[in-house]
Amino acid sequence: MVGYRNISLNEICRELFKDFNRHQRVEKCWRKENDKWVIKNDPFIDDWSEEDYKILVSCLKHTVETGGFVYGAFYNGSLKGFVSVEADIFGGKQRYMDLSSIHISEDMRGNGMGTVLFNEAKAWAKKKGAEKLYISSHSAVESQAFYKKMGCVEAEVYNKEHVEKEPYDCQLECKL
Image (cartoon, rainbow, N blue to C red; front, side, top):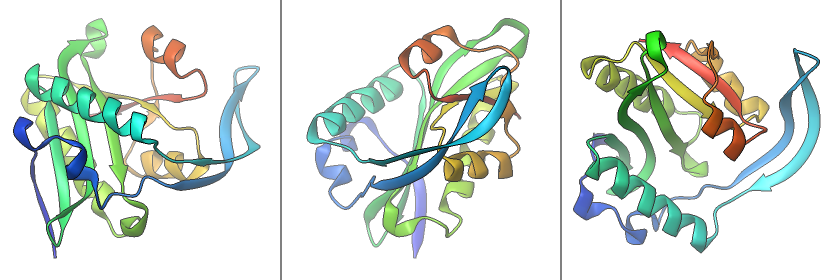
């Protein structure tokens, strides 16, 4: 049975992710070339190191400390998916809130957990006054298929900080 709930600041530690498997085998990615989106072969394995988990824990704690949203999906008491949204609204008339992360453990993908988490993030952001979620998303074909299913489109205004940090990410938005 999957249960969903807010994740509190005192829960966010490395141990929370002990049963979480970020592993993703990527074969094809979307790339923007000459103002057109194309699919390119770009095989690699995406996984998190211990250092990546330390950074994740720090980022999620910061999200909660600054009034943002961290929400999890738990299966048999173990975290198997999570989403985070930053509290600040940006982008002028776009009124974006940053969906800073959404991840599902490899063993739980494809069962609708991501959809529930994404919809909870949308509801929270709308309640806080945003008009759109902003997503700097992994460019893997599978990741982009999920976001398209959720109603995301290319962002009208790109967040320069995200583009500089992850130049191969797809910059998306989703109307709330």
